[in-house]
Amino acid sequence: MANTPNTPENKGDMTVREAGRMGGETTRKEVESGELPKDFYNKIGQKGGETTRKEVETGELPKDFYQQIGHQGGEKVKQEVESGELPKDFYSEIGHQGGQKVKDLIDKGKQSD
Image 1 (cartoon, rainbow, N blue to C red):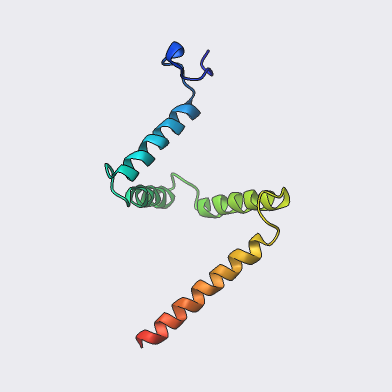
Image 2 (image 1 turned 120 degrees about the vertical axis):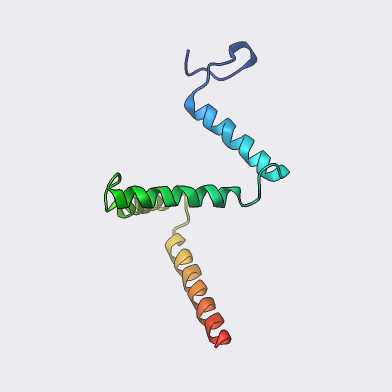
């Protein structure tokens, strides 16, 4: 009965997914309550990124690792657009947002000169 939900009658039997969800909820609550710093997710993301970079550099991960995960992410987004989970103009919208960000950075750079 490893896939049964964790209930008072069934304490201890929990799937990995359930345990992850519970841990994530606990972490979110701790960040919201101030028990963990507001930048907690940024810090652990940065640590994960540094670890991944080192693993690529040492050959533990393939040299094209970032290309592979980027491709996987792009395929996932494409499927979500095609299935209607994301709006048809999703790529147009994110392209516009990226263009605005570049424009803002250029304007900011001009002002500092």
